[in-house]
Picture 1 (cartoon, rainbow, N blue to C red):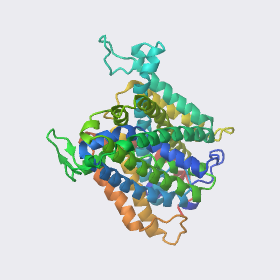
Picture 2: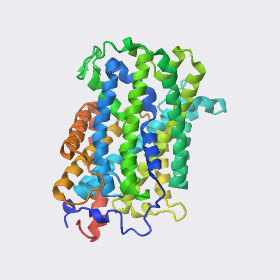
Picture 3: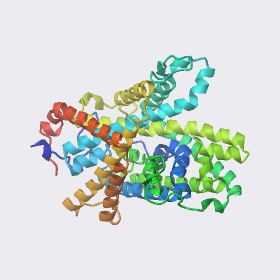
Picture 4: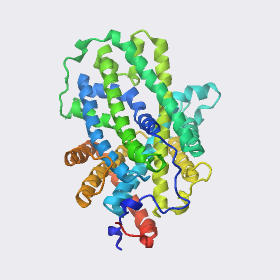
Length: 479
């Protein structure tokens, strides 16, 4: 069978892998917490201000538009994850719908997305935790990577806090999925509680006049005086990146006790909750302070609380931001290890990497390898520009999921669907076209880097995976 024709069977997407099967330990509330933990992180604490600087009060509309595009993708994910309850997320769905080569491209895109997000967030956590490490006596050259010039003119050696948090999260995940999911739930509750306190303290200072003019920089993305695109759509193309993370829920399909029910709740529930949280926080922020004031701060929520004379609460919200970051790393590192795991189980990567620990029911080797990779990247590299590759990888995955819904609807219209995407032609097309628009809005350099990375990935596939995949060795063809 030609490699172009290799497709997984829907009914056997997760079966027939003795010794390489994941333990079912998760319920719907674990999945909602996993999604919220991935989505509500640095974005809510920083992008509210950045987006407001681009769009003014119209940033609320930007959140709504970005949320609508992601909602289309989330509905597509919900249909596919309940029809194909196997690990691998968009990679597995592409394998079933469109074949092995496209599945490899999407899997490689997810590897880029998840690895770079983990590394970038680890660096962000380090920026908040550096003071604690310095107070504990760590020298400054162990608190910054080689690209950083220190006060005495020397260069840093390694960003040790970022390395530590990367490996700590990997170790937690290796202990067991249920245990790490439970800790994630606790941390998610803490950061949501902090946001609730922020809203409660800002409401008494709410001033509706702060919302006029509503769109001072227009609706379309147009270059501003400094050449940077501004407007509601410019902000939406940035704010979109505060939403993704719900796709990590679909990677938990094989570890979910009742996937046909719980995956829909986890994916759609986490997206709906996070969209509501973002819009409420943005509206309250604008009501409490004008956008041109708080948008200049790198920590807008903390800045607003300080201007309202709540310095102690501002400190607690800042602490909650530090707590929020490890939950994002945990969710994306979980997803990354599962993508690696499934690709190895399918033979596209060395199959030994898919071995599951008998006691914990998790792919320990793959999880620790993922943590090590994130630790190396975050400890040594400047990620400001490279991290934008994560956004490109996400958009590619969302486009593939929308396309997979269309292909399977046309090819197998009679197949039972536990969750059916409402108005599926419109929703799937909305996910594809919306993501294509947002991809076109990325910097040209990021687009070039993404395509270069794909060329490297394709080289690995044709040198290794195309000959060693399970389907290449005579497994049953797609049904």
